[in-house]
Image (cartoon, rainbow, N blue to C red; front, side, top):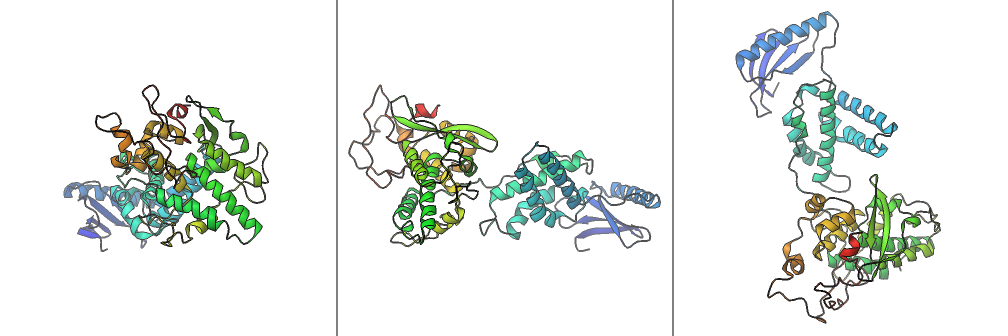
Length: 451
C-alpha cells in the first residue's frame, strides 16, 4: 500500500511498517486473516523495532485465537461508534436530559461530515493526526451552510461532536487512548459577528422604510415588510438572540420603568438557550413594538410578538425577507449588503452583532454589555475584540488632563443603533451632575443596566 514505509515481512501474512502519512515514527502491523482475503491493521504504539516485532507476533497469535473460537476480530469503525453515540444521545433527548435540538445538530454533524470522512476507519486507529488534521480537511472539502467557505465556528462545533464520540469510545472501552488528546481545544480563528457598520445600518433601515416597503406588490407583502422593518429595529436596539425573539410573547414586554436619572426604559423578559433573563431597551423599542401590535392578528398576552400573517409563531423570523432586503441595491453606489466586507453572508444574528458592536463603540462597559446580552465577558472579547481603542477614545481618555469633552452644538453625528437618531445631528452632551456625565438620551443608563 502506498502509505506503507519501512515495510518488513516477519512471516507470510504478517508485516510491520511505518506510515508515510503521519509525522510520528511508531510502528504498525498488518495481519492476514487465516483462510480469508481480509487484513487487520493495528498500531503497535512503539518506535523500537525489536519491541514492534514482539508485539506484532503477540497480536498475530491473538488474532488466530479469535478466529479459531469464532470471536469478533475487527475493532469497531468510527461510523459504528458514532452511531452508538447518536443513539445514546437520542435516548437522553427523549428522557429530557438534553434537548431534541442538540441531538439533531450532533446527529447532523455525524451523518454529513464526520462519518463520511472517518467512518470506515477502525476507532483504534483514530488518533492525534486525524484530530488535528480535521480543520484542514474540512476547509478544503466542503462549504458552509450559507457561505462558500466553512467558518471556524462551524468547524469548532463539529469537532466538539468528534470529541464527544471519541470520549464515548473511551468510556465504552473501545479505545485506550488518553482522552486528554481529544479534550484539547484547537486554536482556531476567533469567531466574529458580521455586524453592519453605522453607515450600512443607516442605509439599510432607511431603504427598508422609504423604498422597499413601498414596492410591496400586495397587501400581504406590504404587511410582512412592515412587520420585518420593525422587527429589524427591535433586534438591533436590544441585542436579542433569534431564539429569544422567536419565543417573545406580549406578556414578556413589561411596563416602562424610571431609571435613576428619571428617564424611562423598557424592561423585556426573554427566554432562550434554556435560560431566562431580563434586558433593558430604550423607549424607542416600545414604539416599534406598538407598530407591530397595531397590525398583528395576535395581540393577546400569551400570543407571540413576531408572527406570520395568520398570527402564528414566526419560526424562520422572516429570513427570506432579510435576504430579499439585503439583495436590494441601495444608495447612489447601488450596493447590496448581503455580505460583509470580509465576504461572509449576513443573517438575522447580524442585528445582535450590530447591537454589541455599536455599544462597544460608544464605550459601554463590557461587563454590563455581557449581562445585557446574556453571555460572558469572554464571549464578548472573542467576538468583538476587533473593536479598536480609537473607537472608544472618549471612554478611554475621559478624565485625562488635556482631553476635553465634545463641545455642545458641535454637530457630532450619531453612530448608535437607535434608528430614529442615526443620520441626524447628535444631541448636545448633557451638563455634568455630581461630577458625572448624564448618558445620552434614548439609551439606558448604566444604573438601569444594573437591573
